[in-house]
Amino acid sequence: MRNFKTLLVIMLALVVASCGSLKLPSPYHVTPSPLINKGGKVTFTINDTIPPKGFPTKEIVKLEPYLKYEGGSLALKPMMLKGQKAEGEGTVINYKEGAPLTYTDVFDYKPEMKVSELWVKVTSLKGGKETPISDVKIADGIVVTSSRVGKGENVAIAEHTYEKETIINTSAKLYFDYNKSNLNNGLKLNKDSKKEMDSLREFIGLNWKIKDVTIDAWASPEGELSLNQELSDDRGATAKKFIEKEIKRNSDNKEEYNVNVSAKGADYDGFMDALNASDIADKNKIANVIKSQVNKSEREQQIRNMTVIYKEIEDMLAVLRRAEISVNCYQPKKTDEEIARLSTSSPDSLTVKELLYSATMTEDVDTKLSIYEAAIAKNDKCWRAYNNAAAIYINKGDVDKASNYIEKANAIKAGQGSVENNMGILAAWNKDYDAAKKHYDAASSAGVDVTYNMGVLKMIDGDYAGAEAAFATKSCDYNLALAQLSEGKTSEATKTLDCAEKTGEVYYLLAVIGARTNNNTMAIDNLKNAIDAVPAYKSEAASDMEFLNLKSNTDFMALIK
Image 1 (cartoon, rainbow, N blue to C red):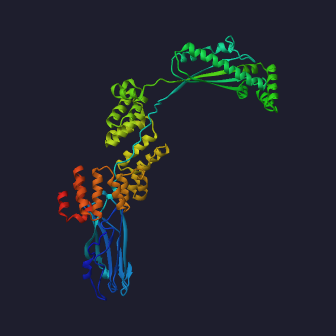
Image 2 (tube, rainbow, N blue to C red):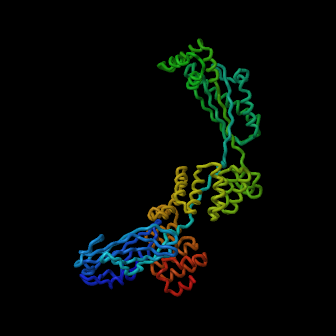
Image 3 (tube, one colour):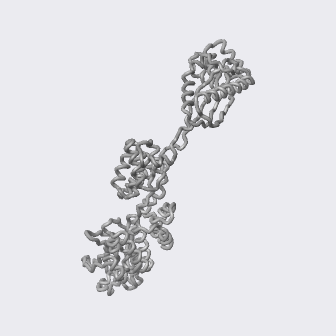
């Protein structure tokens, strides 16, 4: 930071009767100079010393700093100084020893203050009379580089939810006589379950590729333990033969598949669940008797005893003598190549999920956008398609279209993480940072990684260290370099920008680094590239306090004309 020319030089002409001339520091030291906007606040300090015998004992001086900018001015807090014998308020200055002169203030930054000057009004209050001395410029303002945050936020794409492999299954049961494992189609329970079995046969007849078949075989819990296990083994084997025969009879499936048989033994839990759900008046009493038995054999005997008393219990036991058969098949799918081709040639032939999935197969943003719009045309209630189209428009910088799509997505299904994230980006672009943070918090709660996007808000708040940590999720990134530069890490920022994609904003930031490091060649060469990429940077540079030291450089002046 530089020393600016004298504040209050004219005050040297102020003469007091008691002790000679007033002597204030010349020049004054203002830090930082030029002034800097940090998180919407501008803080500056004046640090100097009033020399010995430099302040008359009866003198009173009022210093009133103010910021002057086009269209207005901002009065800052005044400071009163007085001699040892002066009456009134103010900081007492010892005549013989002098004193430090320190002043600090902070004010809110407004965009119109970017091109401004810091002045101080000096007034003598000697004898109770206000006598203007002079208005003196003490600094230029305001550097706003840290607020040049790039629109590099991470958009969130909603999951397509398409399954490349979907397993569909259909189940049916075979029932068995008491202590029997042979198949009895005449058994009433098997006749009653014919509709279920016909559905299984119809499913097999679709000729879908079979993943596997699972069979769980059970016995009722009133029989002996060893017999029940043997019964469930045999019933599983019977069910296996049955389903293999049905598959062979009802389908053209020639591919091998596994039949996984699990002999479960006695279904005690199934019996107790049925008992508890029954209308038997004594069911709690029955359950307590059965549970109180010290071993399984006695428990089985008690269940047998109950069948004599309660006919309903025999009905419960009958449905437990069973084998549950589940045929698991791969749902037929289009190949990825077919989906990719149809997404552009015949999108109407695809489901919405297939369309959303197909968008992941291309890197071309315009193709992605056309696919999302096709999905919307197919189902205008698909919030995922609206959200993903909005994300594309955000990356394109089309705020109006992005806002339109994201509002529709949120109206269909509010509170989705990806939607909240993208709404946060648009809110930040509209400078509604409080709303942006609320959206990001909601997105984070829904599992979306908003670390980088929150870094943008940290930059706006002046938390440059926090922003750098957030932006570190990317390398060779403009915003990362901006955070590093805002922390004074010039070398790190330069390295980050050296490998970044060369855009107008990257060239401009490199020009700023050149100006800060007094590397005029670096500053001017990169500024030229920035203006070539974005002509608006010409007027930006003309008023940017970062280039204050180049105002006398002919090459710089030629660039900004």
